[in-house]
Length: 276
Image (tube, rainbow, N blue to C red; front, side, top):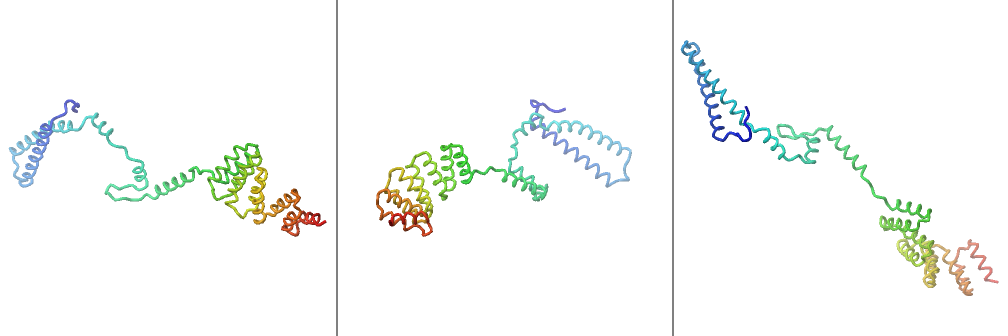
């Protein structure tokens, strides 16, 4: 019979039950020792005494065992104790799977579990999403330009520049979009930033000069075209020569055409006409 929570035995009852059990064990040990010391001197009276002793022990145990069994906490208290027990953490769970501990206290590695854990970790690292790079933004900008979504293209060029600040292409391409929108000042600013990252790129200086000329910045355009020609894009010299011809500065035009390569047919044709 189990005790209910409101009938829980007090400490005195538990101590008495434990003492009775120890006393019965001591009497049984004394009787067993006497039998071993005098195995042949047993008499009917002695047998009768031992029978009474065993009967007393049996009655004592019958009274003690229910009390000892009642000492076990009721089911409600067991449930509460399990509820208060903290759940193991994720790290502890993984450690027990990959590196469990034996009962004797030492640690051992389960290689099959360890291999499974490493495979799972590699799979998780593979599936981690990786953000788009500058090339992805440039491709998206090209598609946006093809659909005449210049606003989206400019946003993608800005993201590409953030992703790769050392790449001049997003800046120059943004300048092209501004030129298509006839926003020449913004285009010149983008080309200037592009040329600052790639000073040896004559095309950046050339497009910058064109944007400044469209924005009616003649001095800035002349300087940019000169940098373009010096960087190897001789179209800058051709722009300067044509400008001089429009201003009737034929000698200045001839000087700029003469800086063009000898194999350039356009430059040689203009030089021949100017020599007449």
